[in-house]
Image (tube, rainbow, N blue to C red; front, side):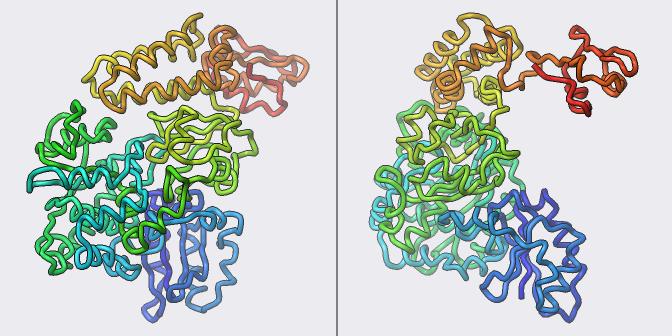
Amino acid sequence: MRIVVGEGSCGIAAGAGKVYDALQTAMNPSDSFELGITGCIGMCFLEPIVDIYEGGDLLARLVHVEAKDGARIAEAVRGGDLSSIEDLKIQEEDAGFLNKQTRIALRNCGIIDPTDLNSYKARDGYKALEKVLKTMTPEEVIEEIKTSGLAGRGGAGFPTWFKWNAARGSAGEEKYLICNADEGDPGAFMDRAVIESDPHNLIEGMLIAAYAIGAKEAIVYVRAEYPLAIIRLEEAIRQATEAGLIGENILGTGFSCKFRYMAGAGAFVCGEETALIESLEGKRGMPRLKPPFPAAAGYKLKPSNINNVETFANVAWIINNGGEAFAAMGTEGSKGTKVFALTGKVKRGGLVEIPMGQTLRHVIFDIGGGIRNEKKIKAVQMGGPSGGCIPENLLDTVIDYKALSATGAIMGSGGMVVMDENTCMVGMARFFLDFTSKESCGKCVHCRIGTKRMLEILTRIVSGKGEEGDIELLEELCNAIKDGALCGLGQTAPNPVLTTIRYFRDEYEAHIKEKKCPAKECVELLSYKIDPDTCKGCTLCARKCPVQAISGEVKNPHAIDQDICIKCGQCYTLCKFGAISVE
């Protein structure tokens, strides 16, 4: 038997390292079972996760494991009787989170040991590379990708084959293949999970792409905030190099390709491909004017191709299984599967990979289990700061590029943030504008100044200082920024504001006209009041108030001085009689 501990970032944050240490301590020298690690399987809501295998068969999946469980897990495996750890086994309804998915990009995540080349090879690792180098021409590889319908998974959804073909067709011998692993959307962690859990899959996909376009050097531009991903990528590069899968004369075919990574400094704008190239060249990350496009003049002004991690993670599977098999999934305009980071007010958060064409409602309710605390769903934010908010009445929208675009949102890299009835949509728009205004590189006036003016207006509105005409002014600024900004960051920054105005205009009007926050989330618009008929005069609220805003005699109704109250909400939380209300 094998005991495998999930050690992705989410698992480690939940205590997987301590669980591993406890299991290691509990093992005896005579034990016949093995102890190992794997990456993130995507069920972040159940971490730490421990899997028990017999050969290739999963015997048990244990969830919410703690270090104190280590000894009894080891004893159960040692005795061959797992009934004593029945309480740790995953519940059937939670298992559905994984069982309802179709995994291609994530097919090895949470299954293989990401630090072991042989573990990847045992699941057909590098067979696609061998097939390509020994039996296919670069043109045939590009044609297979074209047949698959694979589109870039970084957000724009541009046909992958077209970019590869353009780079291959560009003049010059010196060409570069670049992976954009600068995943910066709040709430998005798909690329991080792939690199941490299946780094060789990324390397193999990139080597195939490098062969297709004629590049002799491949580079991964990865966020410095992903330390574990960098460690595992670095180790995978070393292993692949020693195995002759990277470097000169790969697999004896005459194809040579160097491979390296660079850690970016954390600028969101470097997710834009030309800003990424500037950073890669050691310059400040700021977008270039296009054309020329990177396929003609990219890194070092040489022909270059850039795709993101998830795009490359599909490539080996497509080569092994055929482009038609990939194209058979999804919709007419959006082929294959898509990975989403499901987060927010949802019961089961984590990584979800489904065929295109399924609905948002299916992902949130059938896979994600619905909304926490049985609250009502209000909206889902798609595409991060560049995306938009889709309201509850549009949750039956199918997941493909065209359908999501029609709502005002975008597919984006795959962030899916679920919001419940207690989420203020004006506050949500302000949150994303605060992010994009800070992340603007400042190169163009529309983005540098426009996003700040929008943020100022939104800040006024959530502070109770909104004015008549603010909504119209926001819309005017949004359209001007979309039309005038240089790159995708500025062009899409207004999306959260436009979609919240489009679908939740009444919340904006309540903030401006009534000075009220319907979701009761904007602190400066709240007021706490004590019902004299319900208050028992226990004095608890008065004793705990940090600014002495509450007065009253013992066993007599109390009152809150609104001029002193700082709206911390402590009185509301402490009151045992429900005498305090929030308005």
